[in-house]
Image 1 (cartoon, rainbow, N blue to C red):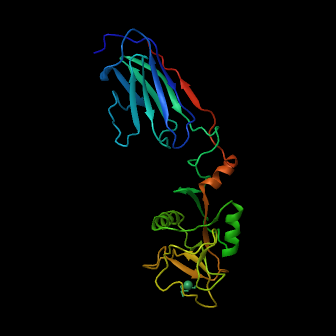
Image 2 (image 1 turned 45 degrees about the vertical axis):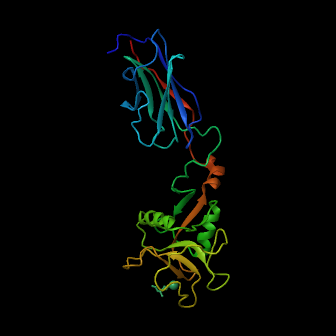
Image 3 (image 1 turned 120 degrees about the vertical axis):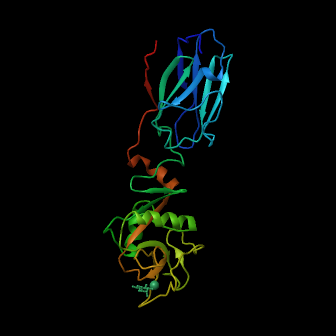
Length: 279
Ligand code: MMA
Ligand code: CA
């Protein structure tokens, strides 16, 4: 086994800040006469769980990479693409029987903002946007819904792809609303020319229900996602009178979020240290 004891093992974080998408390197420095390192003598742990040793990838996403510097008496663990699953986790290295102090990766927003920042609470991330579905009973006509979104640095949702449509269906499903949801599509300016309210561009994707848009009754110029429980009609789009009342969804790009991060609470500080008593 290990016929030696390393008396001092120090774990330090070589790179920061710990922001979404960044990478971070943990450096495990040992003292003593031992020349690093047989694979069985070193261990990395995350929250007490073994990760890897000797560069062997346990995680096939290539999330971790280990390098060894025998001359420098240290070995390092690089963690790629920091995400939610990394924050708050306690990392520790072990050499022989000795265990290092621990470091906790804590979200660091003190070095400015990145495109990976979180959406505000009640907004949900998809691709490069945050989405807000109005709550039960929060109904508006098309114009006051658009005004609500504008007031929150956003616009009525613009659905540009089948993927975004599917995301929207799941998001809306969670609200359990019986009302349809306004989206940004409208043909207010020219009958039959459908445009997005936010970007003022012509639709390049649509998901109309069969027979829609039909400009029924006295005219219908604004589109909503259908959530009525009519077979075959769930989540497809219908045009309605812009004066009718519906739920709605706002969308803002993640870059719009970064200018407003000071309006919600974020963790502060960069590192927490815990001392592990080890003789
Ligand atoms: C029908 C249909 C739609 C129209 C609504 C208006 C229930 O669906 O004609 O196209 O928009 O009525 O309420
Ligand atoms: Ca219609």
